[in-house]
Length: 107
Image (cartoon, rainbow, N blue to C red; front, top):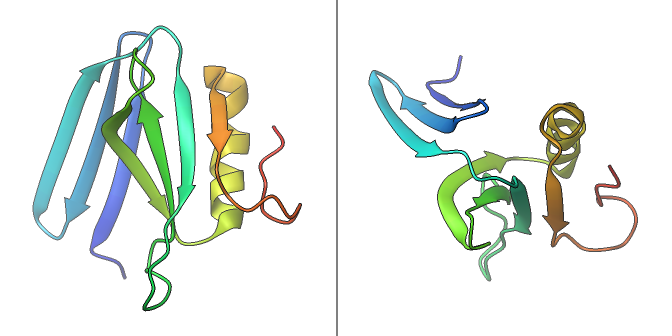
């Protein structure tokens, strides 16, 4: 059983991202940008692989990385998330993972 959870709610007017750790919850509310863009970044360190090596950052109106971030443990989870939300939200995705064909999202 996990005590850590991330939730995202995206409506026509706003985006709400929640992080829940045990009994604590943090909600971020922001207006939804006109165009919804995501940047996928792999995270690595010189000492090894982090627990959540893939991060999806939502970009703001000026295409700057916002504080909205969703973390994933596998490249397949990133692809599943994008495959699920892309048709509904009409996302633009900038994917910075290695382009070896095995972990690239192709819409």
